[in-house]
Image 1 (cartoon, one colour):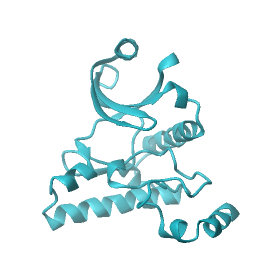
Image 2 (cartoon, one colour):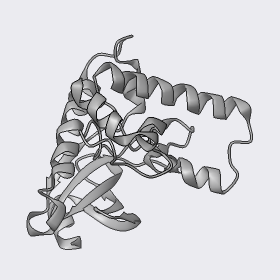
Image 3 (tube, helix red, strand yellow):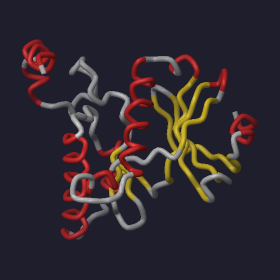
Image 4 (cartoon, helix red, strand yellow):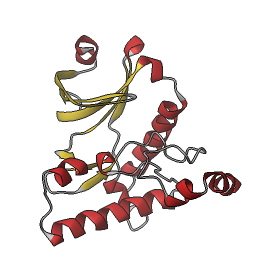
Length: 195
């Protein structure tokens, strides 16, 4: 894996986390001139619907990030910015994105955010990010502290769009799904598919 990453301009890779569809590494990148995060999708999941769907969403977000800032796209700055996709051939594929300090769950676990002002700033920015996604008819469907990254200034970034706008509303992490999907899933699916 390291040799394949080096061919694509990444050096000094190290593991950040691992999940069901792959893992996240941090590395130096010549093209992006600094440290980046690399979300790796393992080969057997490379062609899965969720992976293809996430790639499509991220490509759309990349276009919206490139547009001139204004009131209609203010919240895009709080949504993951795709720097590029990398085909790792038989190993899988990867999404390259700016490196963040940590995820929101880590900050919660260590008892961070004692300041109301910091918490308020995070929530306000998250709501702007969600409002931007919703204005583009995108529903995240797996929003949880692990999928919210923070930079050194505690500016949040919504990540992991693998389940975004999927028609099966029962996807997502139990406990973080919308209450209506838990209470009456059949009815919710019927209503969601009518849209």
